[in-house]
Amino acid sequence: MKWTDTHCHILDDKMSVSADDTLIAARLADVDRFIVIGTDEQTSSAAIELASRHKDVWATVGLHPHDAVLGTHTVQHLVPSPRVVAVGECGLDYFYEHSPRDVQRQVFAEHIALAKQHNLTLVIHTRDAWDDTFDVLDAEGIPERTVLHCFTGGPDEARRCLDRGAFLSFSGIVTFKNSADNQAAAQMCPLDRLLIETDSPYLAPAPHRGRPNQPAFVGVVGTAIADLRGQHPATIAESTSATAILAFPGIGS
Image (cartoon, rainbow, N blue to C red; front, top):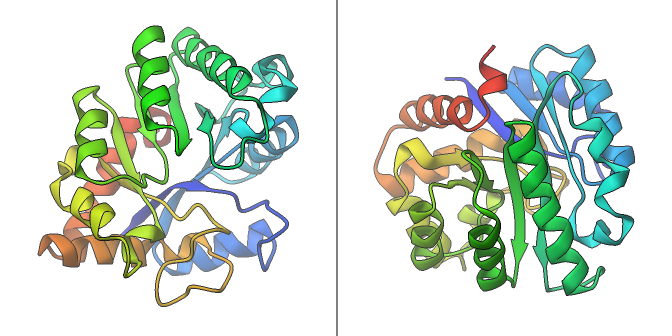
């Protein structure tokens, strides 16, 4: 079985070991593709540099909604870089509101335009902002390939995403005991729209909660989804890796 981690922050200071050592450990756990996420100019540049040194690593460029006040102009020059397969993560976060809501919505709309301009996938972060997320997507027009990263919703939110043609990326949350709605969404999501991720170093899956997450654990997420769906882990490994190539065509080359 080979797994794909479609969303990780392995250059984050909270990681327990270096990015290079993290990749080695993950490869030993049968992970053979990694998408490292940019959340501002510094992390986007670092993700591109890392991807330039590893043939199984790709990068994204974006502004996390927390950093929307920095302005899209701080990252847009990096989008055409080699090894970049997506714009984001970007979106809306009304839980912390580190950036004003109107600024978040404007920067989100600008990232949607960037994804369309460069024919790249859009990676969305949304927290406590489902209605406004859909409103901005509907107003701007959803890109051809759009991923709801670290999908936290239940079947209702899943259906609203799927009806718009989006992919759902499930994280360690699906392994938590109090995540029945999220587990139900993972059960009903079509395999050709279902992705898995770690969001390392955050949201380590059970039984690794309380430790820094790492891409080596992405198979734990996939196996949990397989158990929920009554399928073999190899089926989920194969399908989520194939769907990752649909969602991020650049990682298939």
